[in-house]
Length: 272
Ligand SMILES: [Zn+2]
Figure 1: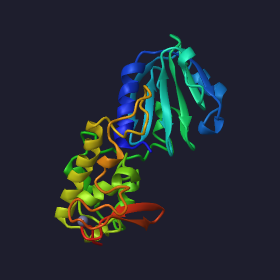
Figure 2: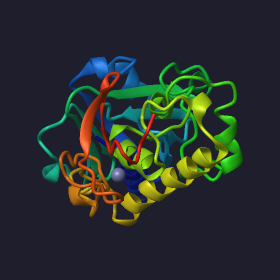
Figure 3: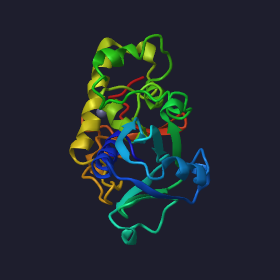
Figure 4: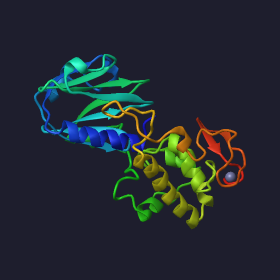
């Protein structure tokens, strides 16, 4: 599942590749992914130039020259694939956007994703994206900002970090290593965390996400040009490594249930 390193990579590639391209056609095979009909969608974006592609947490946003925005979420995963020429376009897709130079991209959701349209004005109230918080790759994500997020917060640390309204872009995949590196149990109560815990957590979030980014993101997620990254499963510290020894203490890694998600932990290094 694409998380911050993967989304950051793909949106950077899209930004470089799609800037100034003019939209010619849109095919929406799965209209329920969108918030408007295919006809209205196309009417509002046809013959318009793409100004910039960015991301907000795990949402990829294409800003258009007429102050419309296309908002793309891969949900549980999917492929966004560029084609130089329509003849080379992937045949498996729910969405296909084509430009006047005959290039374009297809979107294939593995499960269910979203492809929305919102004007700049509508964006302020867009229910899916308006509350998505800034992510750890954002320059504003300082320790001071991070620490202030926890003011008055109770509950468990993993649930807090998973909530995109608190921090954008972190999902279950990198979470195991982030918490392990911080020596925090996923069910540790925020109210019981020390200043040192917050410092460790802040730097671990950066370390773990950057280590994937530096390797070109996750190997089994396709980028905009159909290539995977260099971060392979053996690069996880403890994530998905049941029964393998903890790299710090040698204890066997176990998998536990934490709410609706699974967690991989070392019971010696991560105490509630
Ligand atoms: Zn350990």
